[in-house]
Image (tube, one colour):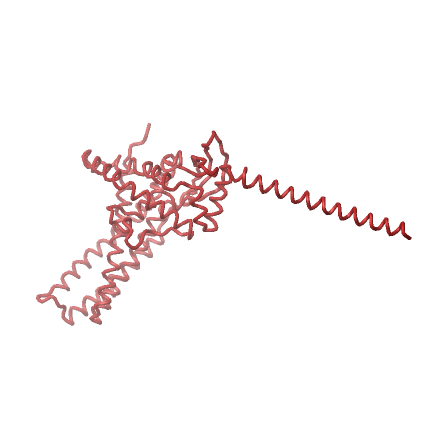
Length: 364
């Protein structure tokens, strides 16, 4: 009996010792993994890129900012984006082109910083939002249509596919990032230049071949835009004739000697707006929606839709203001009209730029 008790105690002690060894081994393994993760892997370009991707997906803007030098990246990307904005515009004299070039150099710090802030807002929210409030890039305060600038950058329509190979040379590295233009579904490999900073982490510094990406996707998008413009030109021309006639009638109906419309004038103006102008605007948009909208022309098609909706709202509020003699309705109409004009200017800029792009001579 004492021998049996002794053997039982020995078995328990051996099992306890095995558990202790297992716990020590697991602890050592965890310690090795922790050391490798935080002191080796965390100081690699691969780790920085995966942290960037994860931060963007989880809207962790603080972590996102740790692994990318946005100020440097946007400053270098700005040069690539603006280097040939006016190169092929035959309507501009060499002197005017030189002035534009100086202007773009002058506003570079504000544009680059504003774009860095825009990217940060996207990292924090997952949405591309334009500058607001007193921001100098809001609207056209700086003489630039920032929404159009952002569209030309391809930021909003570029999708990450996967992280590719990374080549490290000392404290510098080049990472291949597989991306895709959502509009045309064009694949491309960006080369990100990375630098290791003092605390050991890596940061994306700039894009080595950003200009090549722009040169690849922009012509494809421009061709789609040209096809869309051609496909919808007859619709635009037809309704423009109607709108010119309606504008002339509106001008005649609103002529007054004392600045006030009579009851009969108000009746005729509101009838013109509600029975003809607004229905024609909606009918034109329906035909534009039914037209062939190629992938690269989505932005232009969407701008036209927004312009139509705003114009309809302008005339609805204006008509209601006339009938009710309501200044608030007039003020709302004026505010919406300013937004519509801004979009219309953007549409005109796209069409004009596309016309210039189509006129660029082919490279032999």
